Structure formats: C-alpha cells, structure tokens
Image 1 (tube, rainbow, N blue to C red):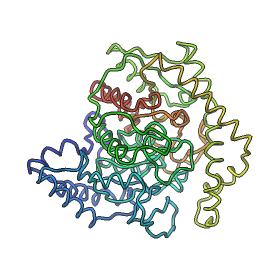
Image 2 (cartoon, rainbow, N blue to C red; image 1 turned 90 degrees about the vertical axis):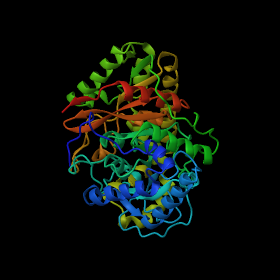
Image 3 (cartoon, rainbow, N blue to C red; image 1 turned 30 degrees about the horizontal axis):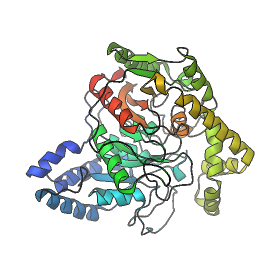
Image 4 (cartoon, rainbow, N blue to C red; image 1 turned 30 degrees about the vertical axis):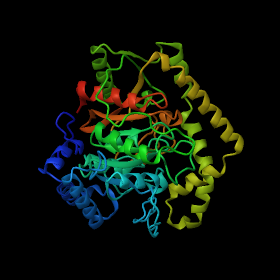
Length: 464
C-alpha cells in the first residue's frame, strides 16, 4: 500500500476508455476484468463489498462489448462497472441496510436509480457496505489509504471502492454528510446534488436525503448523474437535475465565500493551513475570496448555522421515527449506538420539530442572500483526516457520527438542500482531505463546472 500523494495518485476513470471500446483496442469485458482483479487484490483488507453478482456483471459487460462493436452504445456510461450502496434496492441482491445478521431476500424490485443505470447499459457489479441504517455505527470497511482509519460513513463502501481503484463510479446517499465526508477521506470526486434532483425511489422518509455519486473523475460523476436524471427524473414534485449531457469543461469562478460554520474552530491546524493554501492559490488566479467578517450577509449566514448540528439532529430523528419503530422489533440485531439514537428520537416532540424546521428555513434564507455575492462557497469536507477506527471519544461540535468522522462541515450543506461537489485537493498527515464546492439549489452544473476548473488549475495542498 503506497502513501497517499495527491500529485501522483491516479483514479480509475471510464470516459477515457470509451474511444478504445469503439475502435476495438479495449472492451467493457476487459475493463470489468481489470476491476475484478483489483477487487480480488484489495477487498480482503478494504472490505467495501456487501454482495456481488459477478457472473451477471460479466454477461452485462459482454452485451455492452457487442453494442460497442456495432457502434451503438446505449449511453456514455454503457459498460461502466458501478456499485450500489446497500441502502438502495436492486432486484437481484438483498438490501441489508448495514444491519449485521439481517437475512433478507432480494426484493425483486429495482430502485429508480438502479433501473436507470441498467437502462443506460451500466454494469451493476454489486452492493457496497453501508453503516447500520446509514447512521453513525461504523461498518467493517477500512480506509483504502490506511486500514487503521475509517473510510467515513455512511457511504463507507462506496467511497472506499473508489479510493481503492475498484470502480470508476459508485452510488451513495446523504442525509447529513454521508457522501461528501467519506469522499474527502477516500480521495474521491463526489456530488451531493440539489435536494430532489435525483430520484430516491423508495427512500423518501427524510426531507434532506439525497442520492449522489462517488467517482474517479468529475466527468464520470456528471455522466452518471445525468443518465439517472434523464431516465427517472428527480423526486416526486421536483424538477430534477438541470444541466446538459456534456460534462463540464471548467470555468473559473470570479467570487467565492469560505463557509466556516462551527467547523473551522474544531479544524486541526494542519488542515487549516492546507485549506488556506488552496484559498491563496485561488486568489493568485484573480478569484475574490471572502469569509466571515467581510460582509454582513456572510456574518448572518454563519450565525444561522451555529446550531446546525442540534436542529439537524431533531429533524432527522423526528422524521425517521416511524421507520425506526418498525426496525425496533429486530433490536437484538442493532448496535447499542443505533438503539440509543432511536431512543433519543422518541423524545422529540412536534414542537421540537417545528422549531428545527424554522431554524432550517432561516439558514436557507440567509444562504439565498449570498447568491449575488458569490458564484459558490467553499470549505474543507471535514475538520481533518479520517479518524482511527477505534476513535470513540466525544468530539467537540459533533454530537452524531463521531466514530465515522465529524460532519460539522457537511450538515449545513444538507440542511441548505444545496448542490455540493467534493474534490481531492488536500493531503494532511499523509491522508486525503477534500475541498467542497457549494452552490445555490439547482446550480449543480455550475458547481461542477467551477469544480472542474479548480481541479485543472490548483495544485494539491500538502501538509504531510
């Protein structure tokens, strides 16, 4: 296992293999076999996979190979091996939701995203490990850059599989910070889109939950999102993902705002210095970067996020009570930390929930007022590198998910319902830490476009 070096690390990508598929120099069949070889090498210690359908995937890759030979691929992601987080239904694999010993049969039903990916010709290789019920109880998955560290959660397997080079893309979900934080820990490109932009299928019990994509490149990330959106749209009542099929090529932002929230004060010194390096590079390209103290609207926005952890916890706990009560019947299988979260949620009242919704709405209004001031916001994806797997101590500013990392920089973007793209632009103590680019709702393409420019023009910041 090589130490992480953002300057030399090479992600597994798919889009650049397509020309060779078309002229016969390569094929989806051979591409899949290379993925399987990497999985065979690394899975024993990364442990990203919950279940795999190798024979079926090989048959799908062969069908894709024939389509390329005929010059008729179904989409830009035809033949792409993809993993699905084990909170999302697929018709031919069980959905265990990260519960140890949860023996369930395949539902026979594809979630909206799985259905769309199959229609686009993608090769669904299997289910990727999630934390228990998508919560804070750590999974068995390990960080691909240091097996003593967490990959983050709850999209643990999705992030680790991309970081390990097992796949070019994987599907994750986020309610609080479950895509962007693991992406940062595992050196992924990743997107949490605008709330409702990608159809969640059956997972509709949270007013913040989003489907998103982990990938080895922004181009593949966008293509997967677009293919899902154009086939199954967004959540009911939402207009879906805006933006063309062509992935962004990169546009320099003119003005950015640093989102400090309550995360900056708990961010370690080395991560702060790495992030400040990114900010100075942006300024050297003529980008205006403002932060707390530079404008009253920014100060009001920051103030609106001071209790983000508290009111997010109320919203998520209250909204999931009915679902969790059903699961409580199988409490013998649930971890103590999960049962504790269920018990806490039972104490929330309707008045608590209404207070939390009002706080969230205030933050959203303050965020909207920033639109004329900046093209996007930026911040670290976490206050530091991935925590050790045995790190169970309380952590300031993180009342939830401590064992899989502090979500203090992620909770605000989830409650704002904003599009976010994670970029692997920092190394701290030899481990990845990401930078997130945050946009106004429905500006997903613009955010990805600025993210592509940053990827192409900024040097990774390293505090090794």
